[in-house]
View 1: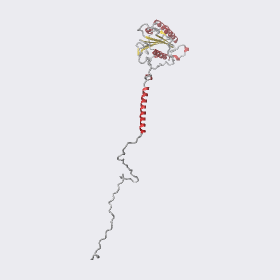
View 2 (view 1 turned 135 degrees about the horizontal axis):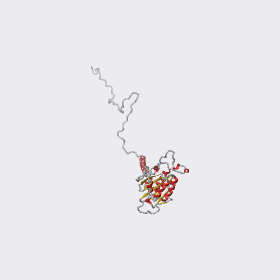
View 3 (view 1 turned 120 degrees about the vertical axis):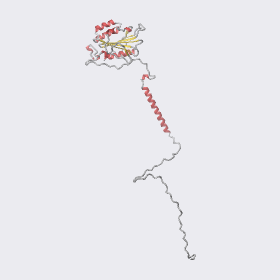
Length: 305
C-alpha cells in the first residue's frame, strides 16, 4: 500500500484549555453554633489583640470636679468636728467665754410631801380665818443636803424631833427662849444639818407653834436678840432681801470678830405661817452670800408650799 493509500495519520488532537489549579474554597468568618430552625445564632466579635497605644486625651473638667469634691468633703468633716467640739461642753467652759463660778450648791429638785386627806397648804387657806398652818409633816419640809455635803451627827432630820432644850442652849438668850417655848405653845422642832463641799456648816431648824400669830411674834423678837454662841458678834441687817421671801431677817458680820478663832457666820429667820425657820451657817473663813441666798430661798419655797 502506498503511502497514499496507507492508513491515515492520527488527526491532530483538539486544542485543550490551559490547566487550572484546583480551586481552594475561601475561608470566611468562623461558623458559629448550628442554627436552630427559625433562629439565627448570634455573632461573636473578638476583642482586638492589641489596643492602640498613645496618651489619653486631656480632660481638665474631670480634675476640677475631683478637686472640688475633695475640698467639699474636707470642709464637711472639719465643720462636723467643730460643731461637736463647740456644742459638747458648756458654753462657759469654752476658751474666752469662761466665767468665774460663784460656788453655789447643787440641790436636788424640790419635792413637797403629800397632804392629809382634805387638808390645804398654807397659801391655800383663807387669811381671814386667822390661822395659816402646815398640815404636812414638818420633817418632810426640811431642805435636803446638796451634792457633796456630809451630814452632821446629832440631827434627826426626817426620823425624829429635835430637843427644845438642846436648841435653846446654842443661843445667847437660852433662858428667854425656854420661857417663850413654854408660854407660846411650841409644838415641836424639826432639824437637820450638813457640812457643804466648801466647808460651810448649815443648820436648819423649823419651829412649829400653835398659831401663826404666835410664830410671827417670836419671829420679830428672835431676829433681834437670838444669836448663836459661836457667832455672838453678829448683828441684824434688815436691808438684805431674799428673792421671793416675804418675811425674813438676817444677821451678818457688821462688826469685827471677838476672836481670831471665831468662825464667819450668817443667821436667817423666816416667818412662814405657824412655823418659824431659823438657818445658821458658819465657816472657818468665810460664808458665801450666794449659798446663803440659795438655802434661805429654797427652804422658804418648801414652807410656802
